[in-house]
Amino acid sequence: MKKNDVLRDILQTRISNQVYYNENVITVRNPEVRQIFTQLRDDEMRSIVRLQKKVQRLESPPGIITKILPSKPKY
Image (cartoon, rainbow, N blue to C red):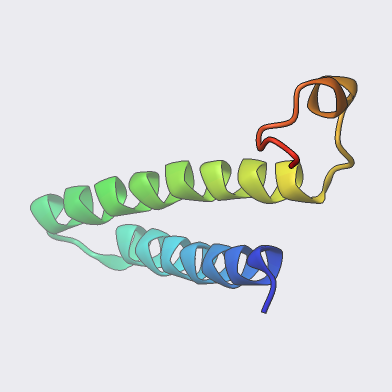
């Protein structure tokens, strides 16, 4: 399994979690519990953004800097 595929699976799970937390924010009446779900939702959203950026970087063609200065030396 490719790294991109694994990251996409994790991304889908994070999105599902975020939807679940958001649904609970809407339906829960207890303010303390609602606040917990809000924090969890916001944490998931930050994680989703980071994962989306990482997937985008992995799927985009290498830029000119990457060609000039490779991250791993070629022996």
